[in-house]
Length: 404
Image (cartoon, rainbow, N blue to C red; front, side, top):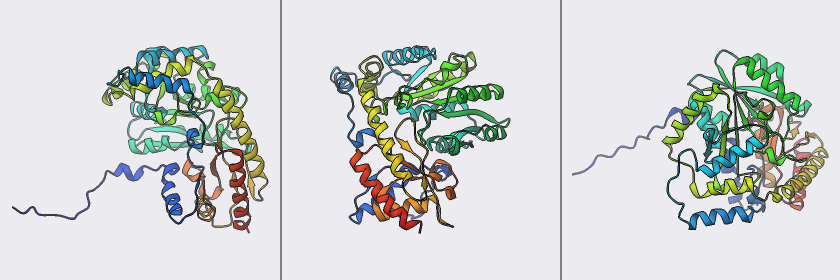
């Protein structure tokens, strides 16, 4: 019997066409540049390990022991008890009281964010997200058929939120406010006054706050206090992970803590139901959570000093380039300079031309929600100082020619 063959393309779901993630999608062009023999300097993804920073040995030993001791089966969907208890104790110690039964261990912070948005937001619902934003939020909202309302962060005021703009955006359909502090992609740290104003705004409009605090331990002057410290009874859901401050991004181990407010009780149940459906996050790596939070953190001091030196070099070198300005970051390993573009050019035009000419790969600001004509781009400054200096030499020479 001969089976008839058809050649019609298999259709894909419409949600895929709404989904964009510039940080990784630009890599395809970088790979084409590499294929021509040009060395590409990848400054697009914030992976400290890729730039030579080492995962603390005591965390590796803990995971290795878990693997050898046979902890390789499924675990509880919400996470193993020691990890949840350690996360709850850490939040409580830093001023945001949390209980282990409201903590979920997730496949990185990204999964926690997706679980939360899936639990909170119906199709057509709205979420306030900062502009520039971490694009995972907008990608997930697009997949859910929900709407991102971008509120401006003002680069003329060190990337602080523009409250006049924020107030004009909220509607009856708005359900949540995303606060990324310390901020990715700008490296900004919000003042206490700004945080209090965000809490007051969310309370007035009945919004859940999604507090993305992944970089809280990477403030250049020390750890940044959690938003929940200022109002432990506010409807706050906080996120963090082992990826950045504990130098283990490939382990995909994060957590979310849902605040004690009774207003969030139904959210706890909804997240638990969704988490049950995906079984669990990686179990052996969960054993590192308690060790990370309760054990030696001396690597963080060294890491912060290294980041501070790289930030200083980055800002000095960028500001020395004609037509380029840069707000100094206060945390993490990102800077967001602004290039005064020639008429008719976009941020993506500049970034692609820089890549093709020099092999330096950054991410254009419109990939984070900014207007493409504004000329912003994000730089990851994790490379060693001497290599960063070489990169900025390349950028300076290219930019001088590009802006002629």
